[in-house]
Length: 141
Image (cartoon, rainbow, N blue to C red; front, side, top):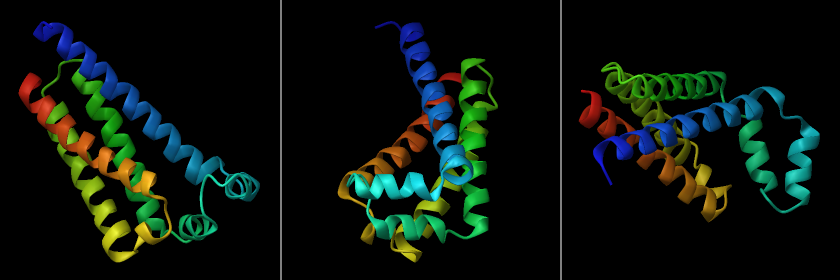
């Protein structure tokens, strides 16, 4: 695979990932309703303890999550535009994600209220955050 094809495949994947994450964050913290959460619990997709966790997340964590989503989206957009600002933007997003993960897993014990698949997904998100920072550094400086 040529470097050009690799770059565009990865850059567009990271952009889709960023848009998807931003949509998930907006839906979770702005548009979800108690009925939505109740339906997910009744379908066995999430635990009631996770709903309780989500509804008790401090405001500063919600805002930091918004910032992580916005910086991830900005980094991916800059990468697609082949701008060197992609690297520091992704690095800031990575910092936000690391703080969120530390708060969630170490301080708040979220692993006790989510399924193993959700833990794996969080690890994948952290890995993608690391990868996106490295990839931007490697390809656009």
